[in-house]
Amino acid sequence: MPLVLPGEQVPAAHVNLKLGPGLLQLSSVDGKSSVISTRAGDLNHSANRSKWWIDSNSRRYIPAPQESVIGIVIARSGENWRVDIGSAHVASLDGLAFEGATKRNRPNLKVGSLLYARVSLAHKDMEPELECFDAQTRKAEGFGELKGGFLVNCSLKMSRLLMDPTHFLLPLLGSRFPLEAATGVNGRVWINTKDPRHIIAASRCIEAVDPDGGGMDEVGVKKFLSTMDV
Amino acid sequence: MPRPPSPSIPEKEFVYGALKEGLRVDGRLPLEMRTPALAFGPELGWVECSLGKTRVLAQVDAKMVKPPPERPLEGIISIHSEISPMASSDYELGRPSDEEVTITRMLDKVLRRSDVVDKESLCVLAGQRVWHLRLTIHCLADAGNMLDCACLAGVVALKHFRRPEVEVVGEEVTVHHPSERAPVPLSMHHTPYCLTFAYFPDASTKPVLDPTHLEQRLSAGMLSIALNAQRELCVVQKAGGVPLAADEILRIVDVAVDKAKELDKLVEQRLKEDWAGRTVEVR
Image (cartoon, rainbow over all chains, first blue to last red; front, side, top):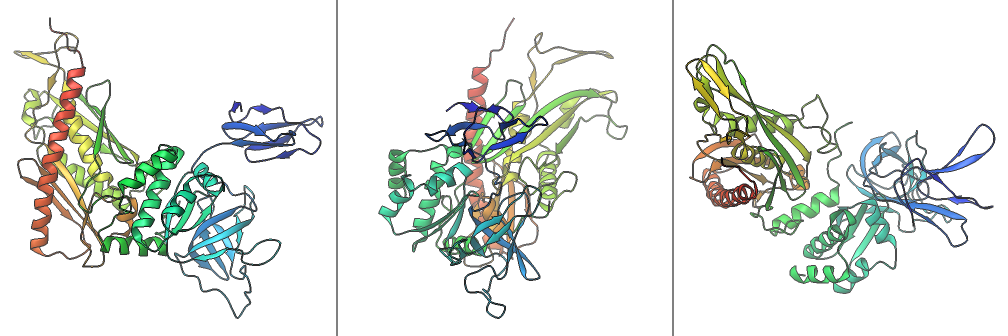
């Protein structure tokens, strides 16, 4: 996994080449195209060398389509909602982009509501757009308003680790107390439990395991949890 | 960039509910302060103070100038603190937000107007040469309570700084380089520490000491008390916010006195450790 810096040329070549996050294809005048990196991090590729991507860490989210994010509603503009997802531009969410919504029957959102949404459109020069239903099935599938609970901010790498089902943290917390969590790839995690102490414990564990905040491992987290009254 | 969005409804409700039970999001007790960590630079008068993730850098510099004619016997102290977007994306350069104005005014009151440094000792030749001390505060990261961090960094930088020794013979002034003669510490009257308490809209919620960024945004009012370890109050600032009874304020002042004593012990210990690590040649 060599370390690359932004702007370096990457030897990615395959018949069905798929470029993941952090890589960009530039075509030059004479028809030859080259692949260069746009982020600093580890360069990875799949076993058959058809998929290439860069593993990097940062705190600022850059929207990409089909990613699940957590947003905060900040304003209403006509029929659309302006939602902050932590990116450079404020995203817009259509008031009807919910499962089973019609002109007469709309979800009742307020300024300050938390939403779990999917980025449907994201170009670097435009405002991103969100939708609150799954693309294929047009059903909610967990998207929509998040009520109660608490929001934790973390780095982007941490939110990707939390979305990985093999990561240890969420199952470990779930074995101690019942917990509901929604992770957005924009560095935000929503947690809901019955007891506020459990939410505080979960939030502190997430900050401790975050690579930016120390990167505690499983043994460390178990010791950390035993110091809190959970 | 426009003002950042206020916290979401779940965050607001959770923090208010937890504070009612006396629980804070980062696990501290309501009147517990984050332990300050002080780092000294290679130069004398360079201090980086961090309270958790809030970090402030302070540097003291001195040069000799001609004093203004209305005050010929005193030195000059000037404090520069401009908050850049480096601290947080909430701040903009050139347009001071409310918080920035509060920090600048408090720093002025705590470090300058409360006579921390003896200005008459900064006079070298009356009417012609005095020391001009310049304290520069850089706010590196804002995770709540930048005011306390900035005041602490400023005070420790003033205590850490050593000015070059000066010899005056008649009308001639000779400034000795630090390598020729050991530099001299500033003569300070007292050491003030600033402590900030945040109050919340619900009257039954007790105040918290050293609020984090989220607690600060959700607070209804803040009370800042600057005092020294000898139980002398320098500044009590409460700009608007929640109405407080007189005995509540006195209770808070008692809490602040204990914290100031702890801070004083910590600062003295760190300064001693740092000074022991520096080599001073004696010829």
